Length: 334
Ligand code: AHM
Ligand code: MG
View 1 (cartoon, rainbow, N blue to C red):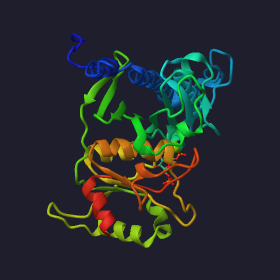
View 2: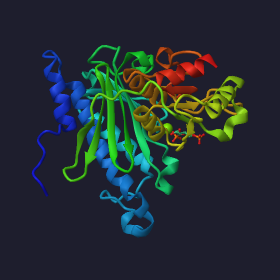
View 3: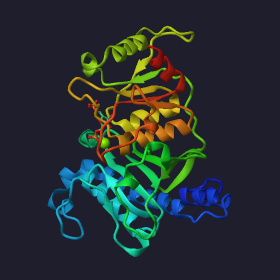
View 4: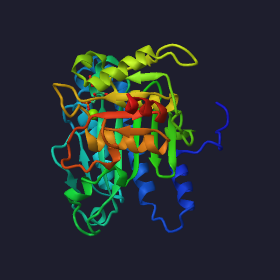
């Protein structure tokens, strides 16, 4: 093995370096991101082993506490919840896996600045077939006073109030991408040192791409506008030629990640069966809308900017149209 490359920044080094520009910053957000990175590494280990579960037999099914091994999404939920609860930055959480939000009832947590909402393992239906899955998270500054328990209003803030948002994709390599208002940066897990290393600094979403991502099976359940736009994508014959390419993994983190890097549009529209779509506003749509906007793209629910929507319930759903600015405008003009 060659010498360690000291020019590559790890996630912890990077967040600490960002702090140096803000002498008054308390470091709580860096701490929270570090916590998320730690939980992500633990989840990554389990996700990688998922295919082995059936051949490990009983031994592999029992964890150190002697409990039956839980479903991976519950495991992931417990990891993210655990690091945030034991960290020093987070007053409470909301999760796709929990019916209601949780306010951490201890002195350090009650005096923490942030709350975090997450989908611990999105696309978990894909685990059995070895397709990439992900974690999505969103961070808000609490609106209730420090010292008290985090309350509903801390969690039901419009996406425009996010302080940071990010995702982890457990893919051919594992990546953590997060955005603050200052930019979007991507880190790839280097398994040889067990650290997320800065690999995609200052990500910008190309203004145009050639990919559209949508569940075609629902075509006849979409509105006329959406059907028309899909047809536009299929008939496209621009300067560099040919129709757009359709790519739909069915794992939102991977689909939106690819489009963010290569350019593209992702849609989960309302259907006749699901008039508000499928995706959850608070921990699926909002974090991706924030990341995409910071990267120069756009995100709407078909009528309104996602980040302007005032949430009314923790698990509410929203249609989502997100991606390259030029393609989003093309959709809006259809
Ligand atoms: P989940 O939170 O139950 O995993 O569902 C969310 C996932 C997204 O990752 C993906 O884009 C979408 O569901 C796919 O849904 P569909 O199969 O209806 O197209
Ligand atoms: Mg999900």
